[in-house]
Amino acid sequence: MQLKFSNKQIIWSSLLCFSAIVLPVTSQAITVQEVPNPRQVNNSWVTDKANILSDSTETQLNQMISDLEAKNGSEIAVVTVPNTKPSATPKEFATELFNFWGIGKKGKNNGVLLLISSGERRVQIETGSGIQSILPDAQVVGIIKTEVTPRFKQQDFDGGTLAGTKALVNVLQTPTVNAQSQTTLPLAPIVPFQGVKPSPIPSQSPVIAILNHYQD
Image (cartoon, rainbow, N blue to C red):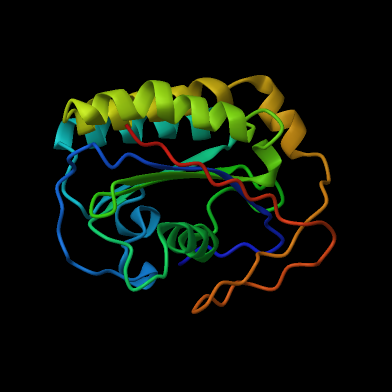
């Protein structure tokens, strides 16, 4: 059964373009609907459509995230894709995927999406409103710049993905996450982009959107 949660505020945390990093590039197009949801496939947390992660790395990622989810219910989906076309931008793709899967617990909005697009050499981390106060935009940008990007530059895609996920887990496993996710927060509509049909959400506050670029 596919999980779809309404009343979720999408918070744009960061979008870094590391054009100097040589990720495996392919022109293969994939839609949001074609990305296998690991929760449905094998009750895991990782989908590696770009084939840049080893089996060992996937196992470690799944274990880390499962331990986190068992501790306080927070969820992290790790997704790699070869390209985000036909979506207009990786940002649009990530928004739709986060909303389509409904990452995070209903009513807590405590989900995180770590998206890596190898064809566009981009990393996107998107968070639900329930954890935004302990995982703000500046901190997410710092995680990508210090943990993910340096390793990707060395062609260490396993190491970069593991380090980035571990940093997210370290923040989310604090007791504060569960307490804050119980608080009723103002909800916001997802800003519609061309070709995206987001779930209806009450209009009570503006979406926070921050776009950052990283280039050597």
